Image 1: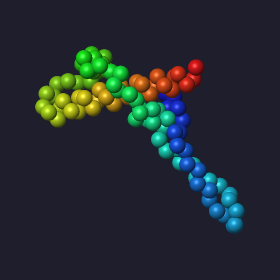
Image 2: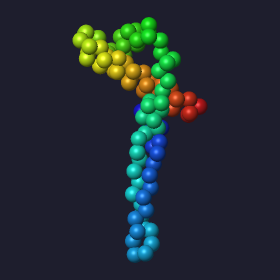
Image 3: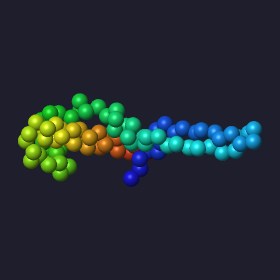
Image 4: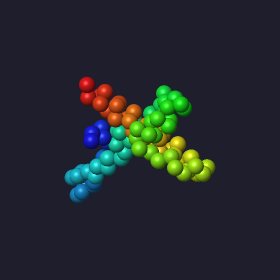
Length: 93
């Protein structure tokens, strides 16, 4: 799966004998994670949540308050990554 590469790479130079010999590269979060975090879920209608959950195989068995919160969070997280994948695919065209 293409994660889009690093969203915010950080390069830290390493001083060696008065100069810079090498660097430590930290990738940070992926572009896919960044896009997922910024996905606009207002595009998903409340009436569609159960259908989306069924298609994604998200379990709806636990009807406690906490179970309902976890269910909603699981659907939201899955939808965010669906939007992120679509954004990465659109960048490649």
